Length: 241
Figure 1 (tube, rainbow, N blue to C red):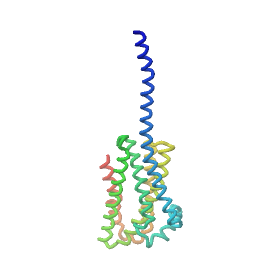
Figure 2: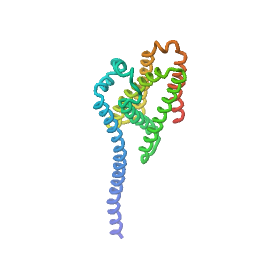
Figure 3: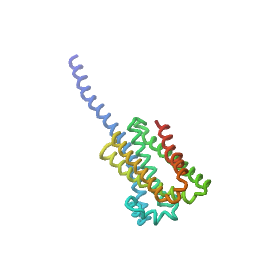
């Protein structure tokens, strides 16, 4: 009887550590899978930026110095379109980077499960893409209705450029949060505040570039800002929360 009890105790002493070790291995495997797709997202963004730099080196250099001077818009903005390859490459970076930051915000407040976090990210990317696409489509319709298609196209181009720049800022923040600092609500809200502030500065600079044209129609411009620059984000926020 004593031998049986001793044998049970020995087996328990062996099996409990093995069970704990298996749990640890499962957690490590789950973390590895999570890290793999995130790493692929970051590598994809870096590859797209490298492609933009390789294909359009001068243009990329002017884009990087955008906060310091207005040379980029003076040289590229007059005859450029939203569908230029350079703009499209950086827009994909914007799509992936901004969506990942939103993903960090949502997971920080408890959205999603460990097994389907990658699916949550794909859903965010799809919603963001549709949201931006519909918004641009409506703005272009307004430009056609009021015979301001050229002006609206230039405004959209400048706005897209500033947001592509903000997306690169968010990309580096995302990398730091995932591999160095660690994501927490305070840091995420601080970065979000900076991104919103930078976006506001971009809108002000865009208005400054078109002030001579917009000044006689300032009331319509204010209505435009409320309807298409503020209201959609408020609606999206209410829908999410």
